[in-house]
Image (cartoon, rainbow over all chains, first blue to last red):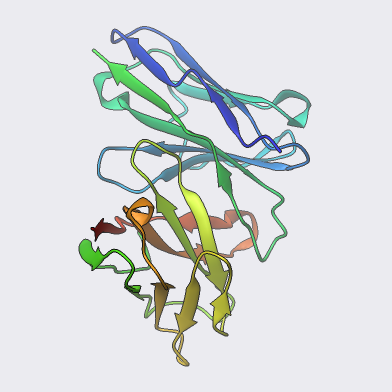
Length: 115
Length: 112
């Protein structure tokens, strides 16, 4: 069974440029997460989807970040415009989210460098 | 803020048991303890989780104290491939605010 697939693996852009990340979750997983992980830190949740609905986007910087999950499967995360402080690894995860017990499966992440 | 406290680093000899401690003194009655690990340049990987009782699977064992204020992850026979950052996480269960709050983890080095 294929795991969570993310692309690209690496992205280097100049500040003020836009960038987008793509995630394909495990088939059948209704819940999808986007995390940001800064160097030496644990992952920080940006947004959580249940099917196509964003149910927790409280940590998403909405002035420059946006996300969508059309048809409740694939998802994209966009930053426009990117800032130097956005350099990080962006992780996507999916789960069946059985309410009280929730095992999340992660992709390999996209490492973003903003110059 | 993370609800767990872990030592920043640990060492273990290959073939020996690795015991990774975690304190979660403010855990609530319905909150689970999860353990994930992250090997360098990879995404986090689920290991095990529990509520009250001790748990065991093919990867590890989880020992939770009776008062649930701390737990220990045990890798019974550590190998070099177990070198990773291990995260102990309490899952917040509050309506739509269900989420894993990640701390800094323990960097485990398994030495030959």
